[in-house]
Amino acid sequence: MAVLQIRLDDKLRKDAQEVAQGLGMDLTTAVRIFLNQMVIDSALPFKPELDPFFSHKNQSALKESIAQGKNGEFIKKNLAELKAME
Image 1 (cartoon, one colour):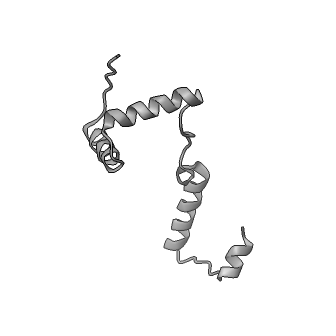
Image 2 (cartoon, rainbow, N blue to C red):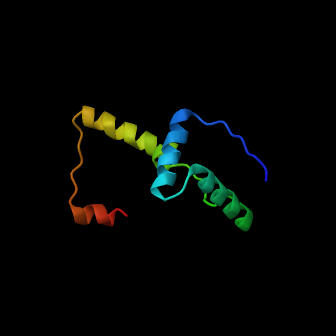
Image 3 (cartoon, rainbow, N blue to C red):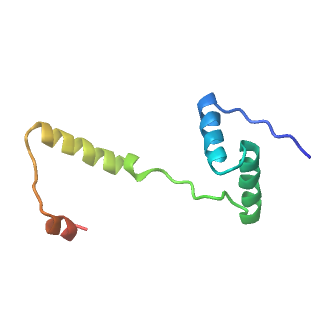
């Protein structure tokens, strides 16, 4: 059996251990499950993607909304109008 050593910051390790314990396992078992699933799928067992909240388009829109709010520019819409925008 091989030994795997990885470097993590203390908070990440502590948080991951708490999640694993909440699932009824230790961190070693959680990592083993992750690696087994990666081998089964021949890929990561999740789809890595960026949070759309942090996209350039969304951040620009948020900054514009904040600036408009500071200038007293507000747009009022009822629920039906908002749904129609989708």
